[in-house]
Length: 62
Image (cartoon, rainbow, N blue to C red; front, side, top):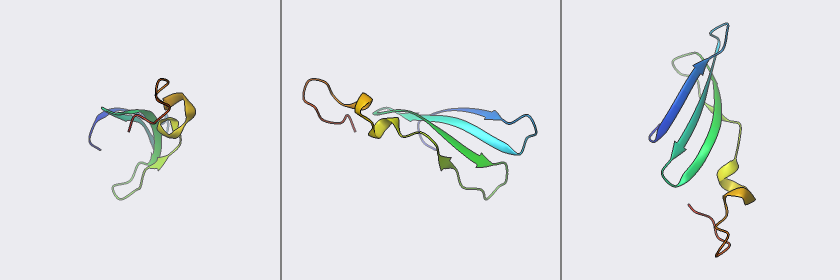
């Protein structure tokens, strides 16, 4: 994934958790199985939440 990433393996090495952000998006948490073709599932959606609104103009920072 393009952008900043922080990755951690589960204690049994079966799952990968990673935080991902981009220059105009907040950090989001993803989980996926530790397999070559596994697809990451987005767990958090902060970039779409009210906390990520521009307080001056009331619009998103996307």
